[in-house]
Length: 50
Image (tube, rainbow, N blue to C red):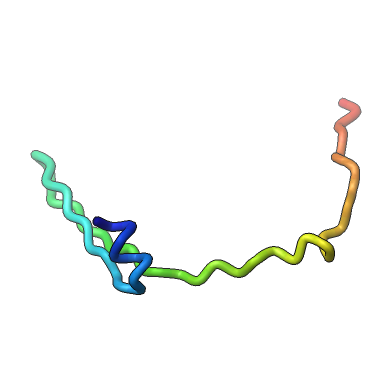
C-alpha cells in the first residue's frame, strides 16, 4: 500500500506499536532525477597502501 500511495504522489504514514512506545513516521514521495551517464567522470578506484 505504501509503494502504491507514493507512486500516486501521496504521502504514507506508518505506525508501529511496541510495549515501550508507539512509533510514527511518514514517507513522502520524491522525484528521482535520472543520472546523466554520459557525464559521469570515470575514475579508477582509490587504493590504500597501508
